[in-house]
Amino acid sequence: MEQLLQQIINGISLGSIYALIALGYTMVYGIIKLINFAHSDVYMIGAYIGYFCMTSLRLGFVSSLLIAMVFCTLLGVAIEKIAYKPLRNATKIAVLITAIGVSLFLEYGTMFIVGPTVRSYPAMRGIMVKTFKLANITITMQQVLIVGITVILMILLQFIVKKTRIGKAMRAVSLDQDAAMLMGVNVNTTISFTFALGSALAGAAGILVGVYYNSINPLMGTLPGLKAFIAAVFGGIGIIPGAMIGGYVIGIIEVFVSGYGNSMYRDAVVFAILILVLIVKPTGLLGKNVREKV
Image 1: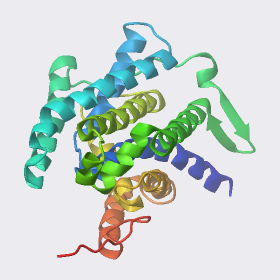
Image 2: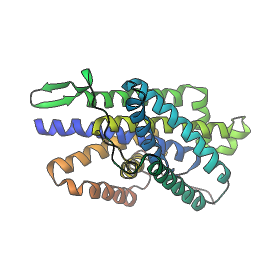
Image 3: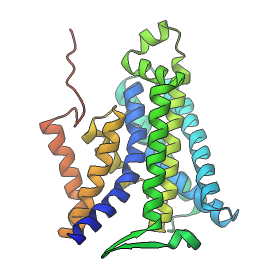
């Protein structure tokens, strides 16, 4: 029983990371029906920005986290303006290929600038290395931090989407872009804001992963990005609560496979879940089938 609870705690920590990344995928898809494969590399950039803030600028964790989120926000807007906006009326395959191209550009551009070597995050000190013991269950301060920051950011995101003017514009554009435009909604600004919001969450996930796993590299976004995409599909792509649920479910399943089975199969199990979801319920856990009139 204690081992089960320990695995659940570990799974929630990992799932928090997937949930933050998945939110970016699902928001962008909900607005413009685009799978932004460059999103996982924005997460990688966030990890590097946090690393350089902590090592070169000697800043604390909170300051580094905020700077990483701001930088990734600007990067997300720049990607949308430069790469995606000119293709707004292009075919879906053209936009998809562009997204893959932007992803590769960020990965190998970062590798060219900082080198391909794995870098270690500076050791945490003080309260950051504290651990809590409940019977034989161990909870680290880093796990508390990851879950706490994720929950705060998710609550803030829900507030923005449900209660603010720009949030209402996002929901209007996701339902019908043309109708929203006729009602006076600035569609371009709304799309840019969506990219900014998703990229900020990815930047936060990047620095949290750096602190938790203590290592970063230019290709670190590839596999977590794919798993976060699976989480978004599992929960219902385009549905924000679905991305949250999907992230936690995928994180817990992955940890269970590693803890009770063989860690070599954890990635295979996650991708098998994607295939199963697409076969059984393509719209995801919270998605609904929508009929289109011909």
